[in-house]
Amino acid sequence: MIWLKNKKFRNFHFIVIGILVILLFSLNSCCTKKYCSGADDINGVTLTNFDSSEVKNVFIVFYTKDSNFNEKVDSLPLEVSNLNDPDKIFYGHTSKKINTDFDYRLYFTTINKEYTVSSFKTSEAKCNTCFLAKDTFIKLDGYTVNQNYRDAYEIEIDKLND
Image (cartoon, rainbow, N blue to C red; front, side):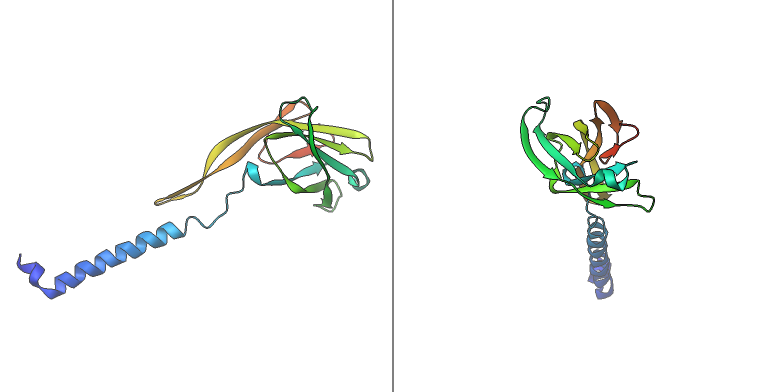
Protein backbone atom coordinates (compact mmCIF):
# COMPACT_ATOMS: atom_id res chain seq x y z
CA MET A 1 0.00 0.00 0.00
CA ILE A 2 1.87 2.90 -1.34
CA TRP A 3 -0.65 5.56 -0.38
CA LEU A 4 -0.22 4.75 3.36
CA LYS A 5 3.43 5.53 3.08
CA ASN A 6 2.60 8.97 1.87
CA LYS A 7 2.70 11.25 4.92
CA LYS A 8 0.03 13.50 3.46
CA PHE A 9 -2.64 10.74 3.45
CA ARG A 10 -1.67 9.44 6.90
CA ASN A 11 -2.22 12.88 8.44
CA PHE A 12 -5.52 13.14 6.60
CA HIS A 13 -6.82 10.01 8.38
CA PHE A 14 -5.89 11.43 11.80
CA ILE A 15 -7.63 14.69 10.98
CA VAL A 16 -10.82 12.95 9.83
CA ILE A 17 -10.88 10.69 12.90
CA GLY A 18 -10.26 13.70 15.16
CA ILE A 19 -13.10 15.67 13.58
CA LEU A 20 -15.49 12.72 13.97
CA VAL A 21 -14.60 12.31 17.66
CA ILE A 22 -15.12 16.02 18.34
CA LEU A 23 -18.40 15.97 16.43
CA LEU A 24 -19.70 12.96 18.39
CA PHE A 25 -18.85 14.56 21.76
CA SER A 26 -20.37 17.90 20.82
CA LEU A 27 -23.61 16.31 19.57
CA ASN A 28 -23.94 14.27 22.72
CA SER A 29 -23.19 17.09 25.14
CA CYS A 30 -25.73 19.53 23.71
CA CYS A 31 -28.65 17.20 24.29
CA THR A 32 -28.56 16.61 28.04
CA LYS A 33 -28.56 20.16 29.35
CA LYS A 34 -32.35 20.49 29.85
CA TYR A 35 -33.79 19.39 33.20
CA CYS A 36 -36.78 17.08 32.82
CA SER A 37 -39.39 18.13 35.37
CA GLY A 38 -41.86 15.41 36.27
CA ALA A 39 -44.16 13.92 38.87
CA ASP A 40 -41.41 13.90 41.49
CA ASP A 41 -40.92 17.68 41.15
CA ILE A 42 -44.38 18.97 42.07
CA ASN A 43 -44.09 21.84 44.56
CA GLY A 44 -47.59 23.18 44.52
CA VAL A 45 -51.10 23.44 43.16
CA THR A 46 -52.70 25.85 40.69
CA LEU A 47 -55.92 27.30 42.10
CA THR A 48 -58.39 28.68 39.53
CA ASN A 49 -61.63 30.65 39.83
CA PHE A 50 -61.02 31.60 43.46
CA ASP A 51 -61.17 35.14 44.84
CA SER A 52 -58.06 36.39 46.62
CA SER A 53 -59.93 36.41 49.95
CA GLU A 54 -60.74 32.70 49.53
CA VAL A 55 -57.12 31.53 49.26
CA LYS A 56 -55.72 33.32 52.32
CA ASN A 57 -55.76 30.25 54.58
CA VAL A 58 -55.24 27.05 52.62
CA PHE A 59 -53.71 23.92 54.14
CA ILE A 60 -52.58 20.73 52.46
CA VAL A 61 -52.75 17.48 54.41
CA PHE A 62 -50.70 14.46 53.31
CA TYR A 63 -52.30 11.01 53.77
CA THR A 64 -51.03 7.49 53.26
CA LYS A 65 -51.95 6.43 49.75
CA ASP A 66 -55.18 4.41 49.47
CA SER A 67 -55.99 4.90 53.18
CA ASN A 68 -59.33 6.52 52.37
CA PHE A 69 -57.93 9.73 53.93
CA ASN A 70 -57.72 8.13 57.37
CA GLU A 71 -53.93 7.90 57.93
CA LYS A 72 -52.62 11.45 58.21
CA VAL A 73 -48.89 11.85 57.53
CA ASP A 74 -48.27 15.62 57.53
CA SER A 75 -49.98 18.99 57.25
CA LEU A 76 -48.63 22.26 55.83
CA PRO A 77 -49.97 25.68 54.91
CA LEU A 78 -49.89 26.64 51.23
CA GLU A 79 -48.04 29.84 50.41
CA VAL A 80 -50.41 31.32 47.84
CA SER A 81 -49.41 33.88 45.22
CA ASN A 82 -51.39 35.53 42.43
CA LEU A 83 -50.53 34.41 38.88
CA ASN A 84 -52.59 36.97 36.93
CA ASP A 85 -54.26 40.36 37.22
CA PRO A 86 -57.96 39.44 37.41
CA ASP A 87 -57.29 37.63 40.71
CA LYS A 88 -58.73 34.31 39.56
CA ILE A 89 -55.61 32.16 39.14
CA PHE A 90 -53.28 31.49 42.05
CA TYR A 91 -50.43 29.14 42.82
CA GLY A 92 -50.19 27.43 46.19
CA HIS A 93 -46.60 26.47 46.94
CA THR A 94 -45.53 23.97 49.61
CA SER A 95 -42.23 23.63 51.42
CA LYS A 96 -42.50 19.87 50.92
CA LYS A 97 -42.81 18.31 47.46
CA ILE A 98 -46.11 16.75 46.50
CA ASN A 99 -45.31 13.09 46.01
CA THR A 100 -47.56 10.82 43.97
CA ASP A 101 -47.06 8.15 46.65
CA PHE A 102 -49.53 10.00 48.93
CA ASP A 103 -53.12 11.23 48.79
CA TYR A 104 -53.95 14.84 49.66
CA ARG A 105 -56.71 16.97 51.06
CA LEU A 106 -56.71 20.74 50.61
CA TYR A 107 -58.62 22.76 53.21
CA PHE A 108 -59.81 26.25 52.32
CA THR A 109 -60.60 27.50 55.82
CA THR A 110 -61.96 30.89 54.72
CA ILE A 111 -64.77 29.33 52.66
CA ASN A 112 -64.99 26.08 54.65
CA LYS A 113 -64.38 23.88 51.60
CA GLU A 114 -62.10 20.90 50.99
CA TYR A 115 -60.79 19.10 47.91
CA THR A 116 -59.27 15.64 47.77
CA VAL A 117 -56.46 14.83 45.32
CA SER A 118 -55.55 11.18 44.80
CA SER A 119 -55.21 8.26 42.37
CA PHE A 120 -52.19 9.63 40.57
CA LYS A 121 -51.39 8.07 37.22
CA THR A 122 -47.78 8.30 36.04
CA SER A 123 -45.63 6.92 33.25
CA GLU A 124 -42.01 6.93 32.20
CA ALA A 125 -41.25 9.45 29.46
CA LYS A 126 -38.19 10.31 27.39
CA CYS A 127 -36.38 13.60 27.63
CA ASN A 128 -33.21 14.98 26.04
CA THR A 129 -33.29 12.30 23.36
CA CYS A 130 -30.57 12.68 20.77
CA PHE A 131 -27.49 10.97 19.44
CA LEU A 132 -26.08 8.56 22.06
CA ALA A 133 -28.19 10.08 24.85
CA LYS A 134 -31.62 9.46 26.30
CA ASP A 135 -32.88 10.63 29.67
CA THR A 136 -36.10 9.43 31.23
CA PHE A 137 -38.34 10.91 33.90
CA ILE A 138 -41.63 10.09 35.60
CA LYS A 139 -44.43 12.06 33.94
CA LEU A 140 -47.72 12.92 35.64
CA ASP A 141 -50.53 11.69 33.36
CA GLY A 142 -53.51 12.41 35.58
CA TYR A 143 -55.15 12.30 39.00
CA THR A 144 -58.55 12.63 40.66
CA VAL A 145 -60.00 15.70 42.36
CA ASN A 146 -62.98 14.85 44.58
CA GLN A 147 -63.15 11.46 42.80
CA ASN A 148 -63.32 13.00 39.30
CA TYR A 149 -60.44 11.94 37.06
CA ARG A 150 -58.50 14.59 35.18
CA ASP A 151 -55.85 14.08 32.48
CA ALA A 152 -53.22 16.66 33.38
CA TYR A 153 -49.48 17.07 33.84
CA GLU A 154 -49.85 19.47 36.79
CA ILE A 155 -52.21 19.64 39.76
CA GLU A 156 -55.03 22.14 39.48
CA ILE A 157 -58.05 22.80 41.69
CA ASP A 158 -60.86 24.65 39.93
CA LYS A 159 -63.47 26.11 42.28
CA LEU A 160 -66.17 26.07 39.59
CA ASN A 161 -65.60 22.55 38.24
CA ASP A 162 -64.33 20.53 41.19
